[in-house]
Image (cartoon, rainbow, N blue to C red):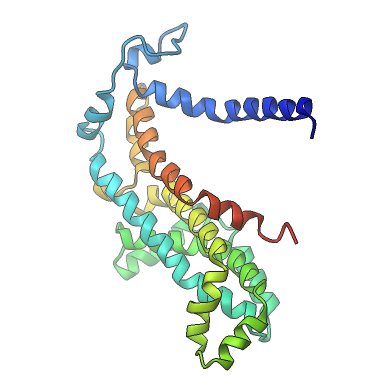
Length: 275
């Protein structure tokens, strides 16, 4: 690659990065402004009056109990992701290693469930949760998030397990390992990039879920940040400084997660593209 072409690609990449990062920059800067400055015409780019105290006062606003909302978001996202992995790993392993009647149909049905949105099924889910007595609870949302992210995780992990040579597991079986030991000691380490990929996508989906939480969780303390954010948007007024601040706080855990497992995630997304 010539130096001229390299500089051209660098320039294009820088422009694209700026386009994608600009909304986040506006959000962060807006979280450090007073509301009057955010609404000023013409707008200011850098805050003329820095208000970092927006990040402290937002926790005590009367609109919503924000500390509880943050805890609710973390609990639902973490346990929803764990539920996805606990169910998806054995399901993907079994479908990749075993032949059974209707296997293609089963995988097709799993894929179809990914096309269904919570808003389509939320009425029926709410009725079931009332019957089970778990409406307006974290458990209800953990089950919803687990169900709607399961199909994607199964498909991702199925392709990774199918890519593990069967001879590796046969050799482990000759060494006396049980099927469970083969899965945990041999197969899982080999598909670790796929597990990381499924984990990230499931966690981000659980963290950002809004529609089902809005209907199922009615107690303010149980609602996640995505729903709590709407409490600052009124019919005639919007507390933009808090909307920006809460949004900034809401993306921090996801950014940290991506930073910690970036290499594994890239390996999982590009697996199989290079022979």
